[in-house]
Length: 301
Length: 157
Ligand SMILES: Cc1cc2nc3c(=O)[nH]c(=O)nc-3n(C[C@H](O)[C@H](O)[C@H](O)COP(=O)(O)OP(=O)(O)OC[C@H]3O[C@@H](n4cnc5c(N)ncnc54)[C@H](O)[C@@H]3O)c2cc1C
Ligand code: FES
Ligand code: FES
Image 1 (tube, chains in turn blue, brown):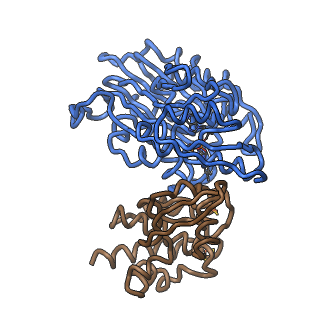
Image 2 (cartoon, chains in turn green, blue):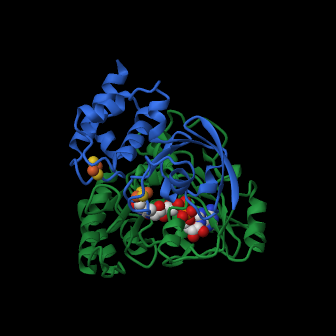
Image 3 (cartoon, helix red, strand yellow):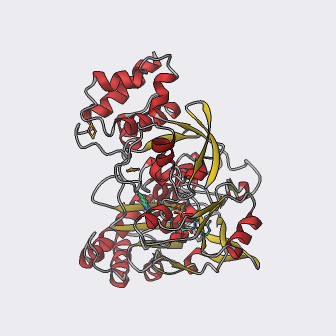
């Protein structure tokens, strides 16, 4: 680190936005687990960091309506309420939330698998999304639930679906001086089943070779009303396999149908070779894991 | 430069820090608390683990300025808060042979303390998850997990 970096700690969102607008070379920082690693390796050299951690309005993790009616309501695979996740909520907070575990199991699984406890205690879902790595675990989990992002910037606030947010590795639709204020996850509705599988060599502190998520919301007669299949490290950004989703939607789940979804997802996956794994292996594992993850969600039983 | 004030092991401290420093550097170089160590400097090894506001963090990735107003606990504080005696957790590490070269030990102890502060009766699996971010190249981990479970049992008595 050559020139001394300035570390700013605004306490309101508008102050943070105005720092980002007026301080040359300023970048937002939350848990710093990507930012500090990037600075250390020489990948980034921001002139100033604008910490979002002291802004109380970004710290909430709450059901999307001010009621505790959800208590005891959602048994098994159902959920009646969505959730609002503030821009600096940590993976550890989600991991510790019994409510997230019960209602959004795939997000809970994705968040609980990020790094180590030390990393999860500071690393935020907002940082995971804005860092836009193709392997971003919590982003792949959130894609399953049609999450949207509230972005706050100099021109006010706007809402964008998470699935439209990513442009490429490390590239997003964030405008200059814009801050991810909140992640909104709508209620998935009753008879929802979901699971996230992080495919790794080791059991802990490892980025995924592949991330595979599935969420199925069934009609009363068992027909698949909504299918979401999300993939990490299968494209330049976290993605949904819309082709596999189409295979599943409007049909009754059978072992053959689920197998077909895996084949279609594998055929369309934009896998490539990296030092962590070869493309052919990733494609083969998408074919294997999509049916397995649907099985683990409990939707087939 | 910035002046920050926070608590370390119960006592308030005020120090001048460079704004690009991490908390580890402040502890090691300004406060001469050398328990937390730099292994990797990138969040991977856990040798720098300290507790901030009740949770374990990698102090190598923790911006120094972010410590403002917070409570930091380091391995040095354990004996201080225990009337000059080793705590049950530290005694269990010694008794179980969970320390060899000792480089990882302060980080291991702080991760284990953060776990036991929240969960006084962890399973072996919960201990492994809590310590997954702490690398030890000597012991093979078995004795460390054993020590944490033994300490938990002793502390519940
Ligand atoms: C040891 C280690 C293990 C890891 N393991 C995993 C893993 O298993 N899976 C995984 O997905 N990731 C992993 N990571 C990467 C990292 O921890 C995550 O991406 C994390 O979620 C980043 O969050 P943060 O709060 O630390 O972000 P920061 O580092 O603070 O920020 C990341 C980026 O997002 C921007 N940003 C942050 N918050 C906002 C906001 N609210 N609005 C606008 N921009 C914002 C920053 O400017 C920066 O560009 C690991 C990192 C380490 C060091
Ligand atoms: S030195 Fe901080 S995790 Fe390795
Ligand atoms: S005792 Fe040597 S690294 Fe753990």
